[in-house]
Length: 260
Image (cartoon, rainbow, N blue to C red; front, side, top):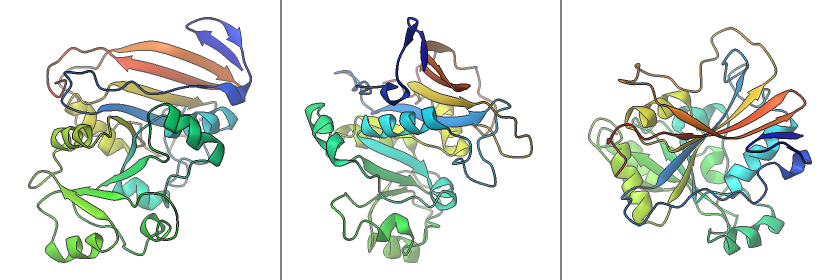
């Protein structure tokens, strides 16, 4: 693997993002910090046959593990959780001590966002945590979800509500900050990424560019209405391995919404 930014160096692919810990919120920040972690083809497609697993290679798999190992919470939309058959985020035994020494819990907390409550209580997302030493997922929803769906979900997970017709993402991230989940990794999908960007709630972007062309209707890493202004990015790190590019960007603050 070649590291090209911030300086040129050779390293083993297994060392990509070694020691990575996402930035904590500053003392005056009222919300958790958010990093997007995504993979896409050269032509911008984020899925093949409905999932992202076929896009990433060896470098992306390392980046995926490092990012999950560096955050307090993993945020994912319900559609992505269903399509990718999400289970609890597992942390290898040799990484637990490293997380604890970095001020992190032994395993990241999984947060699943749904404005409809359309989640199966018998899905692996919930059932796989019943006999494991990992925290059960937290379902993040809004007041529009029918009472019977909320009741079913509360039987298998903690449920928190922010907003009336849609999930209030600013309120959710302030709640995360108060709960000491200050470093949030969002794994999509594109609609959730777009909503976070529209509210100016994204601080970093970790993107793997896979050396393939896919075409079709696989979507982009961000979906939704056009932003009122483009979000400028600063390139922080760039690595290449086997044609895969690992890019780390920080967003450049240009608006006040959500930045408090």
